[in-house]
Each structure stands twice: as structure tokens, then as C-alpha cells.
Amino acid sequence: MERLRIDKWLWAARFYKTRSLASDEIDRGRVQVNGAVVKASRELKAGDTVRLRSGESERTLLVQAISDRRGGAPEAALLYTETAESVQARLALAEQRRLAPEPARSLEGGRPTKRERRDSEQARGWGDRWSASMDSNKS
Image 1 (cartoon, one colour):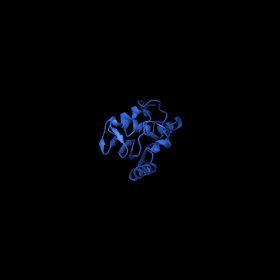
Image 2: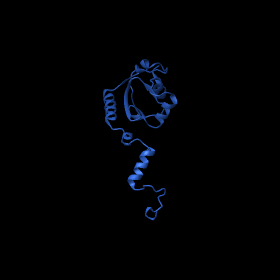
Image 3: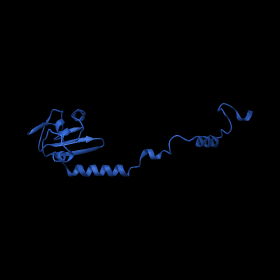
Image 4: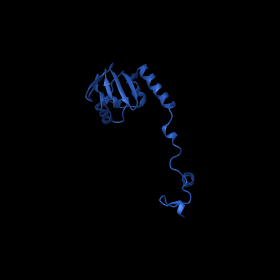
């Protein structure tokens, strides 16, 4: 086998769980072959350069072999080699994500407890009033 559809190859190389997911990503323009955006029916051969984007990371791969059979991860790893620049960029992005502060950590714990709500109301001066419209001076 010398040539194979790119969606089949991406599925066999275990980049996507199903062939239809691979086709969807190709249709969205997230996969390029030799620098050109392609269709799912584009035939791939050994020696082609595939660039694919998944999430925030982008990978550049050199096709080593063609297989239409989806095997295990060790078999799939033999189908391609990732370029050194791609590996460095992925590691730098992972390090940047690791060092970036988590936005949810800035929140202080979500919804206040009943005690915290009462304390904040007392601090705002609501006191013993049971209604915001009730004037405290006329009691």
C-alpha cells in the first residue's frame, strides 16, 4: 500500500478516536498536508508532512509509513515522527500552562455559607431589619 486517505491514516495513527472525528477536523481546516489545507479524501504517502491542531497544541509530523489498520499505540507510533520544533513548541506550551495561574483559584470558595452571609449583612448595616424597604429609624 503506497497511498491512503488522510482521514483513515489519522485514525490508524491514533490521533482521533473515529474516522468521522478525523474527517470533521479536516473539514474545519485543522489539518494540513505539505502546507495546504486538504479534504478528507486527500491521499497521503510516505514522506508527506502533516500539520494538525488539537486544542491549543499544534503538531508537525513526518509520515513514515502508511497503514489502514488501527493497531496499538506502539504500532501507531511507527507510522510517523514528530519534528523537533513541534516537540519543543508542545513542551513549551505545556510548561506555560503549568506555570499559569488557575483562574478558578481567584474565587474564594463560591457561594457564601449562612454564617458568612449574616456576617456580611451585619457589616453592611442591615442589622436586625427583616426587609430592605423598612426604615430602621421609625421602629
